Image (cartoon, rainbow, N blue to C red; front, side, top):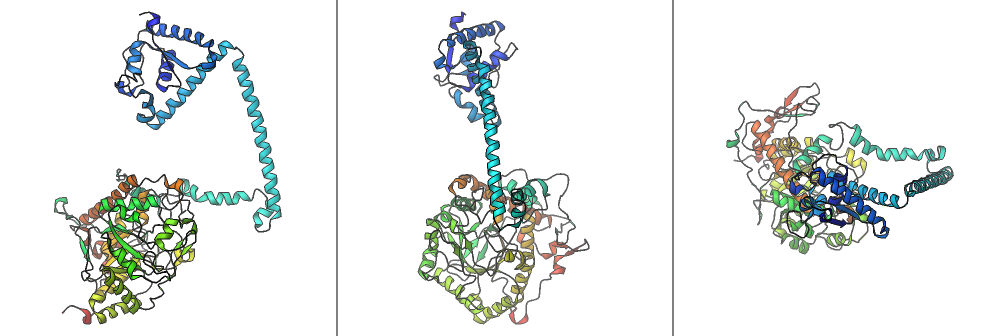
Amino acid sequence: MKDDDIPVVGLMVDLETALFVFVALTKPATSLDCWCPNCRWNLPDVDAETRDRVRERMMEIVEALEEQMDSVQLVAALPPDAMKHLVATSSGGPHSDAKTWATRRLPWPWAIGCTTLDILVTGLFIARVSQRSNPMFIDSLLAGGLQFMSALFISCVGLGAAVAVGLFVMDISQTRDAVRRNYPVIGRFRYVFSMLGEFFRQYFFAMDREEMPFNRAERDWVDRSARESNNTVAFGSTKNLTATGSVIFVNCAFPTLTEDAVDMVPMEIGPHCRYSYVAPSFFNISGMSYGALSTPAVKALSRGAAQAGCWLNTGEGGLSPHHLEGGCDIVFQIGTAKYGVRNPDGSLSDDRLREVAAHEAVRMFELKLSQGAKPGKGGILPGAKVTAEIAGIRGIREGEDSISPNRHPEIRTVSQLLDMIGRIRDVSGKPTGFKSVVGDVDWLEEMCIEIHGRGIESAPDFITVDGGDGGTGAAPMPLIDNVGLSVKEALPMLSDTLHRYGLRKRIRVIASGKLVTPAEVGWALATGADFVTSARGFMFALGCIQSLKCNKNTCPTGITTHNTRLQKGLDPTEKSVRVASYCRKLIREVQVISHSCGVVRPRLMTRKHVRVVQSDGRSVPMNVLCPMPEVLPEYSDP
């Protein structure tokens, strides 16, 4: 083969050609590796003679290019065998997509590395050509670069000094901040470090079981479950098993065999309604309103709930098209502002209620009395989140803060509460209950007595008990920290009260409030809950990183923001799969706990299957700490 037979390919920064040229001109071996994955990284050997001819031909091309400096291109002289295995863009063969394989097929570190090498080789080649035509080219280039960098450095120093002087004058002139006035400029770092402290604590300093409200171990469990990754752990538990209040399940000497286990049994809610609801799943999505959550987040939850077979609670923000998009079962929550079913004066509209109930997907209605994170305070949606669409759904003004009343104006007594529940149930024909934070049981006992006076059909179809450690998008700190009993205390109180008055079978109990792991859900079912709902657990499944920015419209994961740029990071199609995976994984592991306790399904666990660690490090059976009360004689079945 003559030198003239060696083909010449001219490409403008072609990645594969640059890599091949780089290898051809620098690799001392006698074989040439193909960088194309279709060849499985193996190219037939190229003999040394061919390589030498390629080098000679390359130098001829360089000399020829010196005469045409206005149109320098990266040119590679390749032998036919190499060309056959490298670039055949017009042949339709295995290399027809050769120019794009690096960015599409390689892992991103390889793609970045190859692209960087391509640019480097191109730059070195052009510099080499320029130096041959002008020997002083490199020297002048370096001298100019150093001069530019020196000027840039001096400019930056001068600009920094000017900014420091300006800040100094501002700090000593102001009177609002004593630290900045006494320590100008330097005092500002205190606030910077305070702001960054939460991030440093989360990523560098906090141990796996230390963070609040959810520690890293809990968040990682949810994340691995959502990604369907390996969720096992090695070596031993990192949890302090002797801490006061720790829950320990009592394993059975003869656990339930997998083949003897029973899948979830659907449970009916509202048997006295025109349209009762047979709920298939004991684990469901708690109330998070559209407005507090972004559009893609609601879409992902709706689709994921449909895939997992659980219900989705709308929260108090009304019913949006995004809730209906996925085709899941929906629980419509009526808050104190009655968004979505209100008259202009804020009262409940029967006509709007019928419109919502007409949707087949809407299975139940939940009257929200209070929320765990802020009992006695209405919902708060900052004006920055009140878009035109949200304003239309809620029936409020765009851009203004959406603040709900701290209670339903028309509900002052237990009797009025039952009246409102009966009205919603009669208009909608669907199961109706209420959500509340429990502080004491007096009003619950009064309600039970009122129910027996009216007839058992007048009872709410379900009660959602929310713990004082529940979550929210925005709440005053005194309420979120200090008001309302935790679900671990409130749930047994509610269940025991209903049992004492003979209403436990009539009224379904739903537990909510910081229940995101199998152990917590299993505890709730054993304590007396029929269903468990979670909000923040599913937020973690969506990708929440607990940045605590829910109330600022700057959520970095796009879940609780209406900033379209941030929302782009949340793909509803991909995240819906994570939502469904988390739900299914949690249910499976609760079933594993129940089988270890010797029962065939989770709802058969009782308080005797749970022990609670006391202050002395010893555990006590929960049925001893909170024994199930006897039904009062006047309310017992004949």
